[in-house]
Image (cartoon, rainbow, N blue to C red; front, side, top):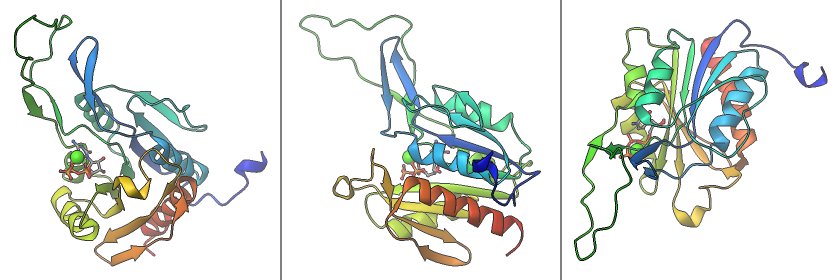
Amino acid sequence: GLLDGGPKPLAGKTAVVTSGPTHEPIDPVRYIANRSSGRQGHAIAAALARLGADVTLVSGPVTIPDPAGVETVHVERAEEMLEAVVSRLPVDIAVMVAAVADWRVAASAGQKIKKQPGEAPPPLVLAENPDILKTVGHHRKRPKLVVGFAAETQDVEKNGRAKLERKGADMIVANDVSPETGIMGGTRNRVKIISAKGVEEWPDLGKEEVADRLAGLVANRLAGT
Ligand code: CTP
Ligand code: CA
């Protein structure tokens, strides 16, 4: 159709993209989570597919629809997201956009926790979740191109560089998610692309435009330009 008419520099390439938050259960009715609409990750999955890539989107719980032209796998917890991503390897491209909860509840309750009159609230004991980006970045089946995000409220570039290094990524898309930027939950994004080549600052763009530019950059990097 008309919409599929553009160039296909990613034809024959495979990609896995994570998007949305993860939900970590406290008990059957309660959870802890990060804020994330899934808009940026879903847009990136769709943009890679438009350039011809065979894309699997691993999405946490979101309210937006599955993107067209992409195989979407729905998960809830970080451990499930890791398992879904690793089961897709080897792929050419990994773009980890999900706002993964850094901690899960160490022993989530099988039954709803009831308030106990006159007693203190129950303590929430947390355990660290696996780092999906870091696992993929250091995997023996490591994708040719590993892209991560860095959501920061301060020192965006410094923190983004540290994440590039620590997680074994080729590129970090860093953004300032301070409440005053209005980025969280919104439709626009202002990012810096951090890689071994240096830092590229992009203007304030719609999340769809960020996705298209990033997909183009991914195609160029894979082509070695
Ligand atoms: N990420 C991941 N798995 C995790 C945590 C983060 O895959 N358990 C990925 C995110 O999808 C993102 C990148 O790592 O691509 C950075 O996430 P971010 O939350 O900014 O970094 P953290 O390493 O968790 O550090 P912190 O939250 O302490 O800033
Ligand atoms: Ca985090």
